[in-house]
Image (cartoon, rainbow, N blue to C red):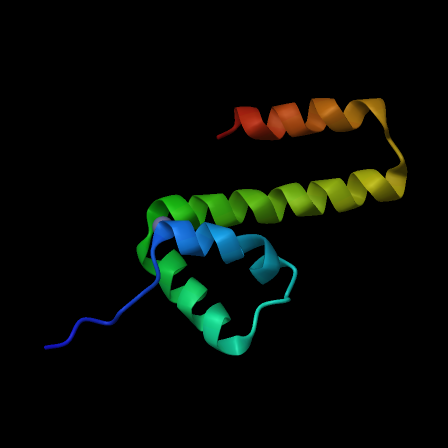
Length: 79
Ligand SMILES: [Zn+2]
């Protein structure tokens, strides 16, 4: 039986940000999703980046400035 070919961690991480920005083509997007499904570390990384993006967006909207660094550190501390 032929094993489903997926991309490696290196490639997954390379495309992760574009993926989260919805800038990835459907083929690459599928490959990345498949990889994230089977790879725990890339899954965590994707979740983390997603969270970070949300936090940064909220921070930007609120113009919190100084506390942004603190927030990111808190966020990083969780991982
Ligand atoms: Zn991986």
